[in-house]
Amino acid sequence: MHEKKPELSDAMKKKVEPKNFTKNPILGTKFTIAVSSAKGGVGKSTFATNLALALKSIGCNVGLLDADIYGPSIPKMFDINEKPKSDGQKLEPVMKYNIQCMSIGFLADQQTPMIWRGPMVTSAIKTFTQKVNWKDLDFIIIDMPPGTGDTQLTFSQEIKIDGAIIVSTPQEVALLDVKRGIKMFDKLGVKILGLIDNMSYFIGDDGKQYNIFGEGGVKKTAEEFEKEFLGEIPIDPEIGKSGDEGMPIVEKNPEHVISRIYLKIAREIKNQYLKI
Ligand SMILES: Nc1ncnc2c1ncn2[C@@H]1O[C@H](COP(=O)(O)OP(=O)(O)OP(=O)(O)O)[C@@H](O)[C@H]1O
Ligand SMILES: [Mg+2]
Image (cartoon, rainbow, N blue to C red; front, side, top):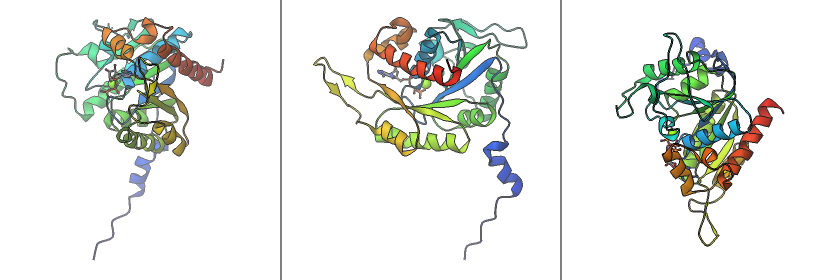
């Protein structure tokens, strides 16, 4: 006969209850928006950088925090090669395209493999959220690493996140991970602003729409979990090219059809939080 598993002690139950975590706001910021997805390579960093630029272009003061300690993307996507200044107490964010930026990639050599372990991730997050001189930000956009690991947990438990945006591609395999991500945020009491369907379709030279990775899956998942569906972003080689060049599409070509999609999403977010 199996032994009955011991019940969690009351102290332990309290520990995993999200409401018992003290969630600190990021100093110098009004609203913190996390761009996340449990799956890698779906376009989180692309979305985070372009959303930051779109919010800036409609008059918001914006910061961009690259929370990907293992594989930072912001130095490349914003073409930043300088190190942040420090007065010994606090780090100054690096200003690019009128956005205050911070990334582990500014501090470590891009070529150096980073063998960060759990405790170091936690201390890097503390530094980025409490020891950076973020100044008068309306929004700080956090570009999360893939997965539901240390970074997501530490942020969700210790930092006041005002909204999480979940980016997915339409494939079933991506959606499975998205569902995991939704459950994690729900459990940790983080409000999900909505889901984005990235690489949703492709418009061919013939003008026809090709749903390469399937159709409607992200929207359906949003409905299933009673979350907002924030929109579709098609596959466009310009998105990859501009990101690789260090000037994301919203900055490079604000009139581009993709930039307009970002601007629409940015306006909705601005209205929701700043109530203008
Ligand atoms: N809508 C799109 N159309 C074309 N290319 C895209 C689109 N969105 C993202 N990409 C490209 O896909 C690749 C992966 O994007 P990105 O680095 O933003 O993903 P990620 O989710 O942040 O990845 P990781 O999990 O590694 O952090 C990049 O080369 C990017 O330029
Ligand atoms: Mg990324």
